[in-house]
Image 1 (cartoon, rainbow, N blue to C red):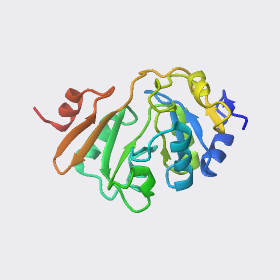
Image 2: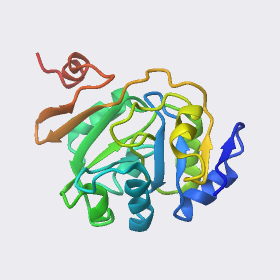
Image 3: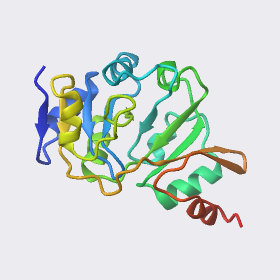
Image 4: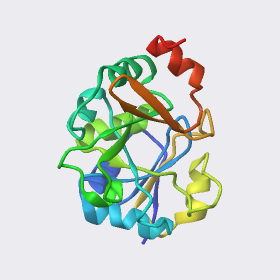
Length: 206
């Protein structure tokens, strides 16, 4: 397989790949992701295979907006809406109850799904134009360093994925903060680029 590197704003090929079940290396403000159609179980299976990631570890979905997040979540509590309005696009993944449109392989059989709106114009454009949420863990071989530029992605997956969007070096270089939200409460599952103090302030928690 020839891995195409997209170095301009023409995302036509990447959109086609994502819609058709292929894999795309995508830039975000945190680290590069390995994106596949999150509603296509076969595409998600490819992500696990290429990364060497155990299928017991769930994936999150990248979405271009809260409205699209609502199409894969069974409900969005008010606290989640507050945080999304404050920090999206940005390094915050909200963990919420999933609905039946999300294949079980994405969540490792669990009943929640992580959703995030990434702060990168090319990836947001890809998600909007492709019209599907993207399952997108970091674009590295499992247990290896997370990729911060397109060349890092190629070092792992050249010849193994259809394309990489070269969106420059990641601004933050660390993963998003993962927050589980239930009625009126939150729990940080992974501390990342967004601080807990910022989350508490947004929710009015002292």
